[in-house]
Length: 290
View 1 (tube, helix red, strand yellow):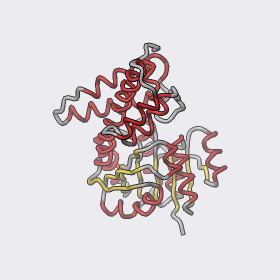
View 2 (view 1 turned 90 degrees about the vertical axis):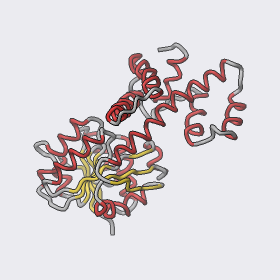
View 3 (view 1 turned 135 degrees about the horizontal axis):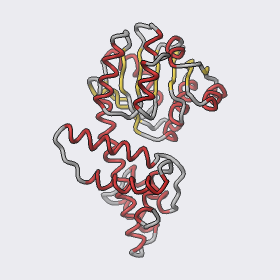
View 4 (view 1 turned 180 degrees about the vertical axis):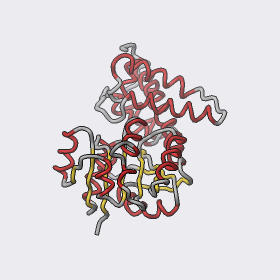
């Protein structure tokens, strides 16, 4: 028999996760400010509810994946936040990418209401949710992770307990540091090879056989060859996440060099009006189209 689960935030990731949770036999209720997304949850077999408090009241474990800290705080502590459900023993899983210190603050505040919060950001796109190839990095209590692990392991390729509260967020920021900067670097590599006369076939064959081979090359290079900018990870999200990496590094006396340079290219793409487009569009900044 499945669990009673609640999803707060029914964007591309939240809805995709809800769909897979339902497929695993869990009952899923959810809330989003967009009535269209609420209707989509109902179409998948979930139960839309009026606010985050109602989601908590009807769940044993709640999840949230939201874009901005203000959205998170409102759904956790607002007039109809989950802390108003008066449900001691509730486990809350915050999957949004945010500053790790902010995650620790949220967990401490929820603990006063008897709610055990884990930070469990995701590596992978919404398409990878459907393929169950995403990974979770989970910070928080060992007891909370043990409660959550059976659910996450079915949804993903891996779910790892990274340590204390906030450590999942740190791991996500470090992961994004590599992914975001590598996106800019692969765009540079592709464009330089093209301009110097290499064919796409030659580049892909040689790169995939040598030391450059890996998931980033396999996923991104073919889309850059075709200038396929179908949304996967938005430019504006890359700008935000790289800012988190720079801030985290400064907190620990690390002066990053590569990340700020790469971030500047995504900021130029954002300034060109491409903020909601796929981050691969940064190649057009290099081409002088921004």
